[in-house]
Image (cartoon, rainbow, N blue to C red; front, side, top):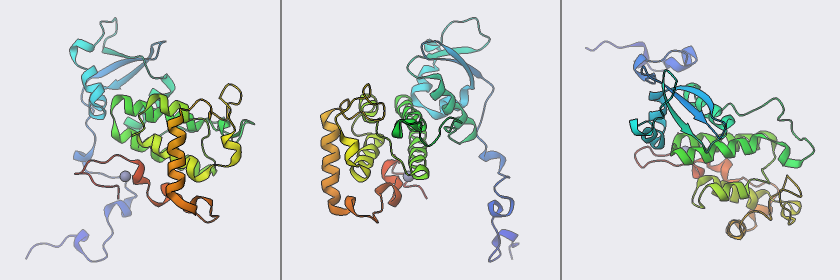
Length: 257
Ligand SMILES: [Zn+2]
């Protein structure tokens, strides 16, 4: 008769419950490898040092960038690549997410309101930029994490971004999940003040005049599709019902649990 382990016993606690998830199997740990890569970020070439194995696992784009022919000759002790199109603050959030699995996006000066409406919530554009970077380097997990963080930031504050439409439309296609989430934010939470025809130069909290007409047509389409539900007091937002709608999943992976 096979030995029965503690875990097999009916009602036995799983290890995660017993120890709060602090212990894991060694083989579950991400492999860090031996190589460190220097990454120059942005026009000013701010330097970061990251394990090569983490970058390669994260992104198809970076796997290609780390091929020998893309590496820069330099005076560093490590191989070096240059990612010009991202801001250092976004890249820093990205590498902390690679190492620690969390999005460190909240800053001390992210007060509820700096007098600039939702523009005052600086975390929104920070997370938007993180998604755009995830799209650029083709890291689906990063994009999904940025979406989750953006939804969580809006839920926590009960405020929604009103100046990200142009930024999103310029940097991701209409098929992107960020674009679709933003369309739904507008369709479900818009108040008349949001749709004054202003651009960000006149009012940093509003970029209605900067976003392309197609975006507003999509907002109108989403509003009509939802019927009267968007005007009800006790509505349940689509991102609260199913945030997987704004994720990308492979067929093999399925939806998030
Ligand atoms: Zn999901």
